[in-house]
Image 1 (cartoon, one colour):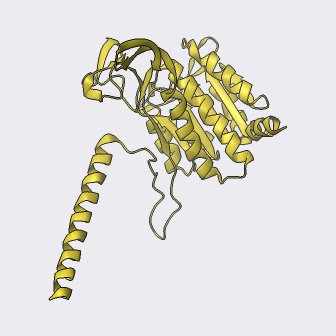
Image 2 (image 1 turned 30 degrees about the vertical axis):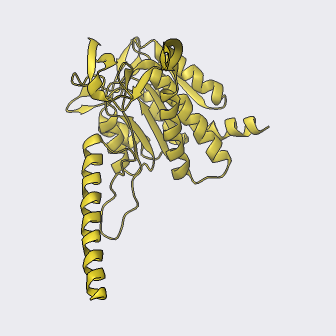
Image 3 (image 1 turned 90 degrees about the horizontal axis):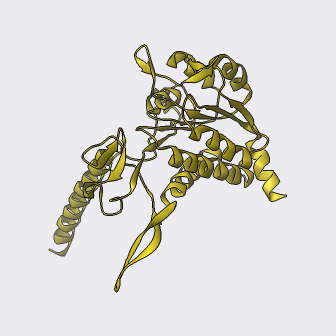
Amino acid sequence: MAAKRKADALNNLLVAGCANGLPAVSAEVDAIVLLAPGARVLRDVSAEEAAREAPSHAWFHFAGHADPTLGSHRTLAWHKNGRPDAIDASTLVQMLRGAEVVLLNGCKSFALAEALAKAGVPNVVGCETLLLDEPGKLFATGFWKTVAVEAEAGRPLRDAVRRAFEAGQLAVKSATGAGTLATDHGSVPSWTPRFAVGIDPEDGRLVAQSALGRGRCLPAAGADAVGRLAAGRWVLLQPQPPQGDLPVMPEHHVLRTEEGALLARLLEMAHSLQDGAIALVGGSARG
């Protein structure tokens, strides 16, 4: 009964999978359908068909190419009469702006995700980088399964999506494959993590390019990533409500590396200033 309630929670979900040469899209859609048999599923759908369906659904998932450009903006690749089908990014924003949760599970979908967030969609997930196929499927199933569980438990949607985002990343990080494990007595054949999350597959400083935008992480990527396939980097955007005259701004749930370093430096400076003020007050009081 509990499993049925969780599946019912995903009846709001519209799933659009457009392969256009990507063999893993069908498997990703199939995996979501197992979680959500009541979801509306569109396979190799045209933009027109998707636009007719989208207003009737609060949650939306796209699997496919998200890196083509039309004009000066990236857009999604739909499918029509055996060919890719595309509409302007601004039209896509108009089409999806009424949704509550959007997951654009395609390469370099961040710009479109950010446009949706600025348009007021309260929970949007996109990818800043290229995205490997299998991690994409793992992230999608981990994400929507957790959205269903948290929604069924009555958790506020904003919190449910944050937990789902973390669950999606965890699903990728915990996927293992054949490897070796170091012990005090040498290496033994083992199952070890396959993917590194948060690493740009096209970054030649961090990833050995065995194919275009594909490869294993170099030591520069960190001890916890070296030797693993760079999976890509997802970002969760949750716009904050307007504060007075201030505009709505997207909140990046996952900090970029440079943002995290800057924040750490600012916190260090703040603590130093605080410690200095405390020492000054303490010395004055003892005098």
